[in-house]
Structure formats: C-alpha cells, structure tokens
Image (cartoon, rainbow, N blue to C red; front, top):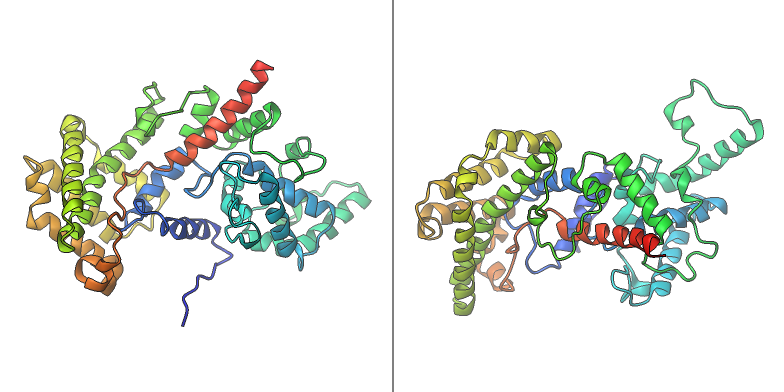
Length: 405
C-alpha cells in the first residue's frame, strides 16, 4: 500500500513543519537524523518568525495574498477556489520563468509544492493575513465571507459586540490593495519595488518586533556573505543576544553528533574516503569547541531549556536526554578522541537513531545503510539563517532602490 501524508486542518503550524520535513528528505546534508528538529525550530521561530526552510524569496509574501485578493474580488466559490488558485500559481510560475528563487521554475504544470502552502503560516506571523485558520479552512469560509461582506456593505453599519468569527470582514491586511499590480500575474518579477519592500519591512517590524529578523530590517544590517547569524559581528539587545547565544551553542555542540553519526555509517559501509572526510570534519568541529570552551562551560543550560520549552512544550524527554547527554559528554572530554572514539558516545548516537527509526535505523539495518548517500544530516544547523538572509537581502535591496532613484 503506498504511503501518503494527510493534513490536519486544525494544525497549520504542524502542516508547515511537515512540509519542511518532506523538503528536507531531498537534501543530502540537512535531514534531521537524530530527532533534534523541535529544538532547532524553537530558536528559529524566535529569531526568524514566519520563515521556513522551503521559502525562497520575499516577493511571495505579496504574490500569495495578491492572488487571493483577486479571487475574492471575483467571488470565487469555496468549491472552486482551490483549483482556481492552483491554476493561478502555475501561471505565476510561467511568468517568472527561470528566475532564481522562482517556485515551480522546472515543474510548471506539474508543480506540487504551491507557494501559497509554503508561505501561508508566514503570512499570519507577519500580519499580512488576517484570517486565522488553515488554508483549507480559508477556502471553505469564502462563501460565507461573501455573504457577510455583502451584508456589511448594504447596511453600512458597524457591528458592535459581535463574535470574533463575525468580525472578520477582511482576510488580508488593508495595505495590500494599494500595492497590487493591475495585471498580476502578468509581468511578475521577484524584485521588490521600494514601496513593496517598505511594506514588508513595516509588517515584520510591527508583527515580529522582538525578533532578530525585525532588528536586522529595522537597522538595515548588511547580511550578504554571512554564513551564520552569530557571525554578523553587531551589537544586539540583551534579549536577542541571549537567544542567538543559545542557538549558536546548540548548533555548534550538536554538530559533532551529526558528524559522528555519519562517521559511524562510513566505517560500517567501509567507505574509506568518507571515513577520512568525516574525521577531518570532526577535527575542525573540535577546534571550534576548543576555541569557545570557556563560553560553553559558562552556558546557562537551564535558561536554554526554559526557552526551548516555552516555545515548544512538546519536546520529548528522550530528545532532551539525548541532547543533554551529548553536551555533558563533550564538555567533560579532554580531547576529540574521548568523544568520537568512546563507546559511550557511539552508543548514544546509535540508540538515539533507533529510538526514532526503530528497525529502519541505518546504524542497525544493513539494507537501510546501503541506501546512505554518504551525507545525511551532516550540515551544521543554521536556524533558518540561509532562508532569512535571502529574504532580508531582498527587502533591503528594494529599499535601496528607493534611495538610488
């Protein structure tokens, strides 16, 4: 029987995370092999709200609501809006062609990962979408929305004391209509105009004011070429500095576990070149740990876990135990070999994979091991920095165009 995913409409955030997971299955080095994604996402959500690993460029934060505004103006019914929206998004992909960051530039008519699903949750986080529910709920709500909107227009009266569901007479932020191109999607491009960039900047600073994303946009910080957010080299408010400090420490510490996992697989599959590669990468990782040992030893891990559970209280005790055990082992080890060659560390890695995958764990299943490509979950966690960096750059470039004009 073929496998399939079915979405739960009441959990849009979970749907977004599952989309991320599916996308990561196609990435050689960024998969979550050790079940640490919930901890990673806790800091990514705080630092860069509204983003996901499968977003591409900032302009889709406008494309998606513009599309739905057009469909609403035509009073597209609940029964037909899903298919009409799909056709619209395919046409948009054709208009964008091979532009870098265009979703569907290769798939076109066969496009499966629609921009509207990729950006749906982010639109709410940024205060661009007013409708609070899932995309499927939104589609189902349109018929009643048109009736209520018509009733509001015909009476010309304000509704006082009405329920929250009755008060929603706009599904999208009022400022969108002033920016919408006349012939959209005809002539669509991924570059932001000065007014579009200013709008997105304002939305982030208003709706996500305490985030690093908002801070970088507010002060127009140049992010090009910066590999990780903690390498920005700028002074941050204490609260943001603490979040970034926790994120950096977690990313750098857990990277050793990711690399050791792949080294174990390289040894089991007798791939000598990969064994050499991962040993060298582990040498580099240990140099990073050593260079920051003083900071890592003084790391307030109680505050770290408090922050994690405040954002995601569903982190399992097994996930916490694995991460904490790894951190303790690394900090107590006098040298790299005490980590990478120890039975304790290797057992910790193998046991964690088995907890997650059971009989399909690569370290214990030869057939699953044979499918290992040579790199699985080995890239250091960047907490969605790569996606956010592109979005920030898009917005800042749009703002600079206004200065240059």
